[in-house]
Image (tube, rainbow, N blue to C red; front, top):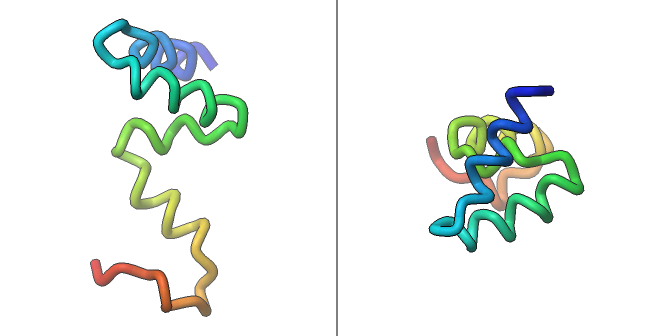
Length: 59
């Protein structure tokens, strides 16, 4: 979990106020990975049901 804490510390920097606020909300729901942008696409793919194609973006 130390890596997660390090990521949080990164988003708590003053010049990333917006990201810091979002990180707190995401941190509570345990989805702070979405903030990194690296796992954002992958996480969204998992969240979207396989049958629902109305909201899926063409990759």
